[in-house]
Figure 1: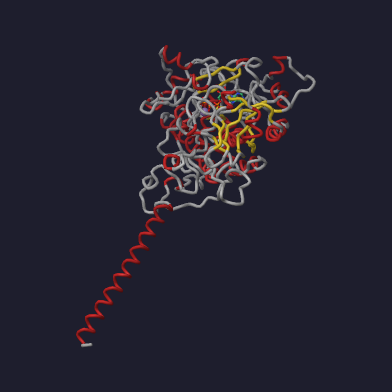
Figure 2: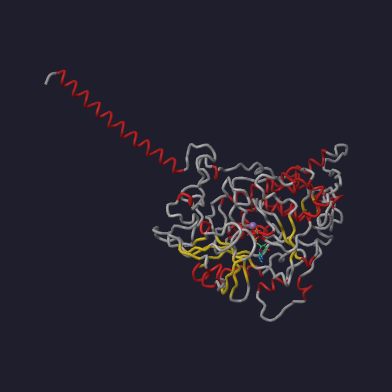
Length: 555
Ligand SMILES: Nc1ncnc2c1ncn2[C@@H]1O[C@H](COP(=O)(O)OP(=O)(O)OP(=O)(O)O)[C@@H](O)[C@H]1O
Ligand SMILES: [Mn+2]
């Protein structure tokens, strides 16, 4: 072979080799991109890459649209993955992913601020001058209000005193609990009935299952062997599933673990205005379906294509095959809230929350556009006198800490009149966004600039001493479904305590600014009474016994 031929053949061979290497490299690059895209869309801008979907390992409602079998998105695909999990879905440890819209850690701006100014204020009597019941809120300008009476208690009355239902033979813990509900609180501090009610709700045999009328989502009324009842909300998501960014608060699904956590939070904050709630693992087939007698509920039970047991019930928004609740294969977590006394025994009134959101995708509520809105509210009953305005402040702190934007109505026990506590009910939409602090939930506190002294003291203790998250962890540890909250939600609780304290500090400073002529920087400002139209007044008045979907129109 001539030298020239050898050179040509050599050149051709090296050309082939280079081409082969190029093709192999291209394939690797494609694989890498594909993996990156499936992983978390590592380089995508915030909120764009996932298009409303969460990581592929998290069961997600949006996957339903893409699933070839059209199985309900929130069912647990247990097979073929041995060994089966103890529960449908134990929360996974939190591993922050970079550039992840849903999991971007947020800074805690008040972590190193001890709020010594607020602590000092509490020790100076002139800054917390009010003692006992407020008779006219239109003239109260103090930020920190102490509505306990001189001996440190608020006047109290018990249901038993009214109903003469003292002790009867064969009363269950829950019925005894009912007779001890008071004008001031649902149960006393360190109540011994609460732990036994929680235990019974998670263990007693279930003898009857029915659907709870009203409301937007499926809830079951559970009856136990001893005759007690509970309101069950079923699990739909794993604990780290967050509210989807394009969902309004009113289209968010309810979370059973939020109901459980809210009961513990309410108790730890010292409000004790919520009914006890326990988690429980149930068998859909033997404990729920077998105990259903109503055919309209029974006919909604079915086996999914993945052989999981499901049901959807009948309700106004999310009760159809594509929004079914599914077990693994028939094991399901749920929250069980101890039942309130029946309305025949103890009637309740439903009130429209003055800082209710609009529940309309384009309209705003008046409080969102009128910074003086509180001056309207403090003029009208039942907020003009007594404890209710401070209860609304407590409720706002409670909801802000857990990120609950769904406080459209609240209920009170009619028997106790207006100077009684609002029942803390319905927290299924709390704990939805661990990395976002929704300050608008604090609007009542920000606009009225009032806080109950004992609530402020509690918050300061949580901030500077044993953390709120620690109290929560301890309190929820005994629940059968523990751990109840995904870790970032516990972190958020501690962070949000600082935000509330900061808003109280700002209220004190605003007062000082509007009283510049005075020597003392913390003398509160004067408030202007404001007129209210009859329509606004009507809107705020009690709404009788209408419940659930009848009272809440989502537009
Ligand atoms: N523990 C309880 N015992 C008895 N009744 C209860 C209990 N909790 C709630 N209810 C009643 O059931 C109604 C609906 O409950 P809840 O508000 O939790 O459900 P929901 O589906 O979230 O309702 P909505 O869609 O109106 O927010 C409440 O307004 C209340 O009247
Ligand atoms: Mn609700």
